[in-house]
Amino acid sequence: MFLINIKIDCPHCSSPKVVKNGKKPTGKQNFLCKDCRKQFQCEYTNQDSNPTIHKYVKDSLLHGGGIRDNAAVFNISRQTVLNIIEREGKDVPIKPLKEHYSKVQIDEMYSFVGSKNKKVWIFYVYAPETKEILAYTMGKRTAKQVSYLLLKIKSLDIKIDAYQTDAFEGFKSIFRRHTHLIGKEYTKHIEGRNNCVRARLARFQRRTTKFSKKLIYQWWLFNMLVQWLNDQAASYI
Image 1 (cartoon, rainbow, N blue to C red):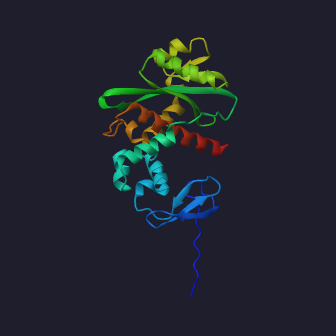
Image 2: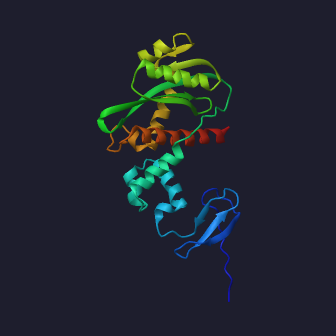
Image 3: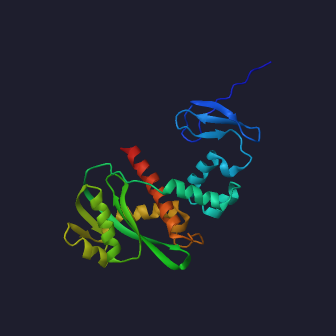
């Protein structure tokens, strides 16, 4: 007779400190992680509750998968996918890696919300020296939206020597009191980051049939991407 030991790690935090914690009404063993204090099972009848599937969904969303795609592939409901977007993207704080940046680049890109007749613009600040996104706003393509972005930059309590943008009039009016370099030659890095965003999020592709029905989900999904990109940037330093 052989005794088989199966090592179980927490699907939420990957901790090996896992103990048995009773059984579910279905008769399946329940486990508790002693580090993050979350409960889980090794097998799930309903995949909507499976935390491992939730991780796969998050990765898929950040690699071009749409909401309906994830629901179909992982055999879960669309509402579960939306719940994952809300949980992962609702509160994403920005923590700059440096206190002083010699230059940052600012650009805007659009996506659709509700229908292809409704463009929503994202303005964001990119630091090419650390490859991190420092601030962003979402709304209309106006100087007022750029002013909101500047307020977000100031709230980070960092020093920036120069702002680099294209020739959009909103940038010219808002950054005229700062060191402001204008021209496509100054925005090459952020243009590359735009391509990355379009590749990672299906709804930001120029010709797509995938777009958010509600602006808030668009915001949360972009939050998820910013967190992922900034975590990648931090790992390189």
